[in-house]
Image (cartoon, helix red, strand yellow):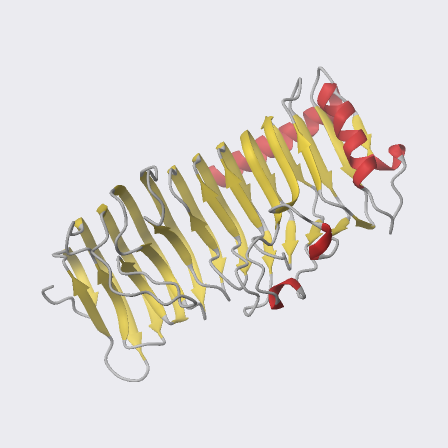
Length: 382
């Protein structure tokens, strides 16, 4: 409770400071009108707010505003916020030639809030084979920032991506897309540190939260996930020179009718890298197909993967504790580690997962975990 209150207080103070000190740059003062493309007005308001020597706010009022692809870039002279009260709507796929529709980058002390929404209008894009579809929101090199009380729906690809971020909090988000929307991760985080994702609802067609390489000191707490593919670390080891992952905690989350619960996945035949200090605790699984997974023989279901040498991603210091609920498959715990660099220091504690079709099972490879408390299904020798 104290953590959530502190985040609310920080967000409120930032917003109040913007209004009180630097003033409000309302896009309607720059020519924005409902049902007309807001891009130029938004860029003009951002430019003036960014040059303001005291904290300032860009406001998008209630109403529906189509918006062409836009990049809102710093560095700014003081903290800056965007208060989104309206609904931004994306153009068609052909009108967004890059990997993101709305981009915030190189900003320090940023707040996005307001209760409004961004609608990626992605249904047609999900039917295409185009793998370079744009995300709804992209945050590049954004630091010391709060993103809260925002809805993102129906992206053409990911809802939100974070690259090169530091000290960012995502809270009270409403992330919405149907379960059959292809590759619509809720939040993808890579090459970033000190990131919190809190008190949010994520319903989408791919991972609710996913991680690339180079992340550290991450907290995911009080997330309701479903539909979706769960929370995934990786896939790792697809590219050379990937940066280590160190320090991810996922706690007090609920997964409902997802294909996976919590998952660590690495490609076979991968170059050497490290994934360590990952902890999953106080989780509820409601009819989840694969509740607990380490998969170091990962292969995308859309690809044909011939046999390869074992993964060289070294996984260590992993814990799964206080996890209960139901599995839709009989293998409720799947821990398949690399035979070349077996997982080390893996702990299981107080797990109770049932399977309606009979007795749940566990599957272990190249692993001897430490077990504490009740473990259902029982974990046998690797």
